[in-house]
Length: 120
Image 1 (cartoon, rainbow, N blue to C red):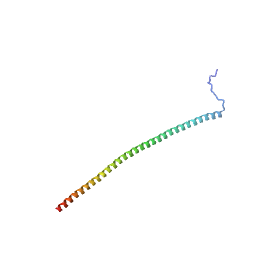
Image 2: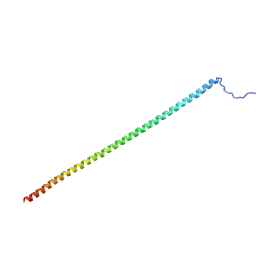
Image 3: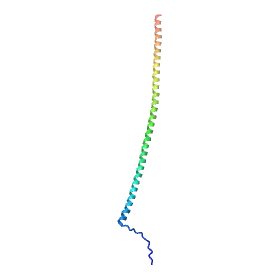
Image 4: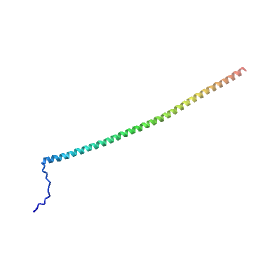
């Protein structure tokens, strides 16, 4: 009778050497995968922080644009208000001067008429 047993590949390597080599290989893979994960986490963090900085920067630029626009509009309204107040004051002074001139003229006419009627 022939023995039809499958051939089992038995290493002729000492058991301790086999265990050390196998665990060392597994450990190397674990270290490589761990550092791959650390690199991925680093890249993701870098992207997120960069995105946050970009968002803050764009927001700040937007706020600055709004402030410049508000400043320009306030300056425009202020210039218009200054011009309007100047015009009102100048017209008031001119009206006052014209009124004073009319009062002086009318007073002179009345005084002249009163003096003229007394002399007659």
